[in-house]
Amino acid sequence: MPAEMVEQWRILQAETPGLDSPFLSPHWPRAVERAQQGLDRGLRVAVMHQGGRPRGFIAVRAEGPAAMPAGAPMCDYQAVVAEPDASLDPRRLVHALGVGRLDFSHMMAGQEAFAPYAKGHTNSWIVDVAEGYDAYVAERRGAGVMAFKDLDKKRRKAERENGPVTFSAHARGQADFDQLFAWKREQLRATGQTDIFAIDWTRRLMRELFESRESDFGGVLFALHIGDRLAAAHFHLRGAAVIHAWMIAHDPEFERYSPGLLLFQDILRWMDGTPYRRLDLGQGDYRFKRELSNAQQGIMHGYVGIPSPAAFMRGAVYSVRRAAEALPLGRVSELPGKAMRRMDLLRGLR
Image (cartoon, rainbow, N blue to C red):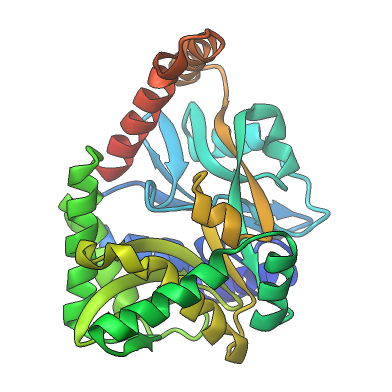
């Protein structure tokens, strides 16, 4: 992609409210491309032209009969980064990609052109600290959230029993980075989930982002030590003004102190002296996300298809899923949706 077009994408992203996620940066597909070098994954950037000039960008993986987000399943947001008055036709996008359909799983709800193709909606949880950490905590306490008082007690208890609690931002220790992913992989195995880091390209992507020195994009490692031991580590993706929570794990032996939450608290305090104004916790209905967040970002899943076998098959699968979810069968009703998500995950990893 020409350097001038990359710069235009960056400027457009910076000037468009709500599209400042690092997953929507032109640096994201470039990092994915380097991680997948030699794998021929069909990574493409679709450029929307109107009036003789580019007015929108989206990165996808177009391989075989269907397209999906670039870097899936590691990509937590999708959107066309476009000028506000640009006219987008998703079906023309699919046709231009030379596929029968475009699947999306984390399309931002503000992408109105994709709304008619959505099959479901959920939310990502946001912590907005634009007014500063103290104002944020006061607002959360005013909303009846007692998490911060509890965390302060746990921090004091950890210090009494184990020694100083130490926070590190932009940590560069290779041992801490390796330990985080060892914990994360064990967590995935213990919960019966797919080990996404068993795949070479995902490990290469994490390493490259860890080593990144770009001013407005890259990975950032946060570490929490209790005494002389690593208790928790987070590896997040950063943009110009937002940090996206991504890989989170902790030492099970320190579970009683909630070290992962202590680390989130330290990150939010640290953000006061930085350009970062938002910590995106991503989707997932977890208590800690509900308590920490003070805003939400809607996301959609679905697909855009043109007449083709690929679109027909996706529509049939969604019909089965919708019928199952309408039945009062408890967790059994969720099985088609879970199977569909697992197949998409494996398709992205391969």
